[in-house]
Amino acid sequence: MELTKNIFFNTDKLIENSKVKISYTGQLFQDSCEEVTIHYGFGLNWDNVNDLKMEKTDLGFQAEIELGEGETFNFCFKDENDCWDNNNGENYIFPLEKVQNELLVLEDEPVSLGSARKLRRSYLWSKKVRLAVYKLITYLPKIISGNYKRKLKNNEN
Image 1: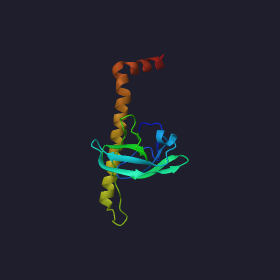
Image 2: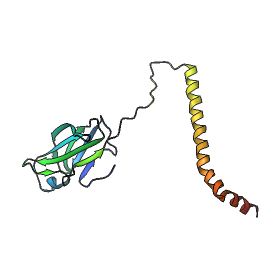
Image 3: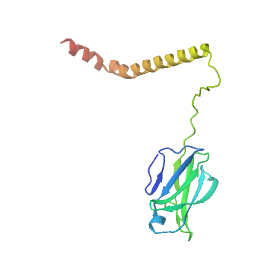
Image 4: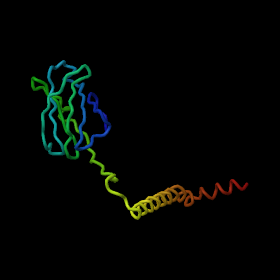
């Protein structure tokens, strides 16, 4: 995620449908504004637009936001006098990552011996395939370029 001056998140990745804490120390904070509101939405069309009053702290204005769905998290800030910090008209835009679904083994359901063997075989197979691909990527260019043969000749002398 690209870093932006004066905006900080409590995480290194913004994942849709999760909570994130945002801290703002930009121009409105530096101008000693008393109230700052974050105006935000999701995706290219700014879907699900919301305004949320941020809490003023010694470290800047802070708010916890429930991230929605979309490709991006878009936002800007305004103070009590309707002065805006919208990144010079560009708005602040950060990419959202999709939730990664992982294979879950439920403890309540017993795993049959046959399915466990299948999982083990597929795991071993994928490990062998990864090793073969690694060897191809590592040694094939050396063989094609002739560097591999030269090293063998140098070792013989």
